[in-house]
Length: 68
Image (cartoon, rainbow, N blue to C red; front, side, top):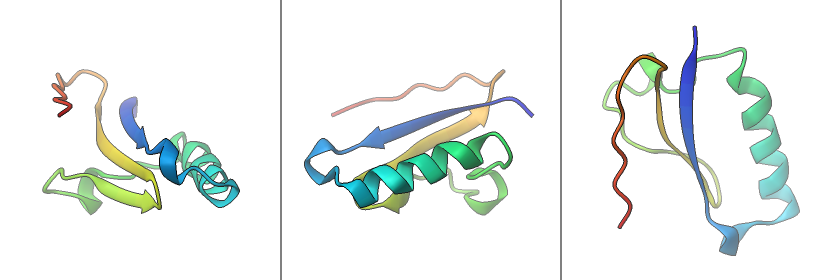
Protein backbone atom coordinates (compact mmCIF):
# COMPACT_ATOMS: atom_id res chain seq x y z
CA UNK A 1 0.00 0.00 0.00
CA UNK A 2 1.32 3.44 -0.92
CA UNK A 3 1.49 5.85 1.99
CA UNK A 4 2.78 9.32 2.69
CA UNK A 5 4.54 9.89 5.99
CA UNK A 6 5.23 13.27 7.59
CA UNK A 7 8.09 13.16 10.11
CA UNK A 8 9.14 16.00 12.43
CA UNK A 9 12.78 16.17 13.51
CA UNK A 10 13.72 18.48 16.36
CA UNK A 11 17.32 19.41 15.54
CA UNK A 12 17.92 20.50 19.15
CA UNK A 13 17.68 16.83 20.16
CA UNK A 14 19.53 15.38 17.17
CA UNK A 15 22.16 12.97 18.48
CA UNK A 16 23.79 9.84 17.06
CA UNK A 17 21.15 7.75 18.89
CA UNK A 18 18.34 9.87 17.40
CA UNK A 19 19.87 9.51 13.94
CA UNK A 20 20.02 5.73 14.40
CA UNK A 21 16.37 5.67 15.50
CA UNK A 22 15.43 7.76 12.46
CA UNK A 23 17.27 5.33 10.17
CA UNK A 24 15.36 2.41 11.73
CA UNK A 25 12.11 4.31 11.21
CA UNK A 26 12.85 5.06 7.55
CA UNK A 27 13.91 1.45 6.94
CA UNK A 28 10.62 0.17 8.35
CA UNK A 29 8.37 2.55 6.37
CA UNK A 30 8.52 0.47 3.21
CA UNK A 31 7.51 -2.76 4.92
CA UNK A 32 4.94 -1.66 7.46
CA UNK A 33 2.07 0.71 8.10
CA UNK A 34 3.13 2.43 11.31
CA UNK A 35 0.20 4.61 12.31
CA UNK A 36 -2.99 3.17 10.75
CA UNK A 37 -4.69 0.66 13.04
CA UNK A 38 -2.10 1.30 15.77
CA UNK A 39 -3.09 4.95 15.89
CA UNK A 40 -6.84 5.24 15.16
CA UNK A 41 -6.99 8.74 16.69
CA UNK A 42 -4.45 9.95 14.16
CA UNK A 43 -2.44 11.95 16.67
CA UNK A 44 1.36 12.34 16.46
CA UNK A 45 3.45 9.42 17.65
CA UNK A 46 6.71 10.10 19.53
CA UNK A 47 9.17 7.74 17.85
CA UNK A 48 12.23 8.75 19.91
CA UNK A 49 13.63 11.90 21.50
CA UNK A 50 13.31 14.61 18.87
CA UNK A 51 11.57 12.47 16.22
CA UNK A 52 7.78 12.31 15.80
CA UNK A 53 5.53 10.83 13.15
CA UNK A 54 3.04 13.62 12.52
CA UNK A 55 0.89 11.80 10.00
CA UNK A 56 0.75 8.77 7.76
CA UNK A 57 -2.00 8.47 5.17
CA UNK A 58 -2.80 6.59 2.01
CA UNK A 59 -1.35 8.46 -0.96
CA UNK A 60 -4.83 9.28 -2.28
CA UNK A 61 -5.98 11.03 0.92
CA UNK A 62 -5.69 14.79 1.32
CA UNK A 63 -3.72 15.93 4.35
CA UNK A 64 -3.47 19.48 5.63
CA UNK A 65 -0.72 20.15 8.14
CA UNK A 66 -0.68 23.36 10.18
CA UNK A 67 2.59 24.36 11.79
CA UNK A 68 2.50 26.81 14.70
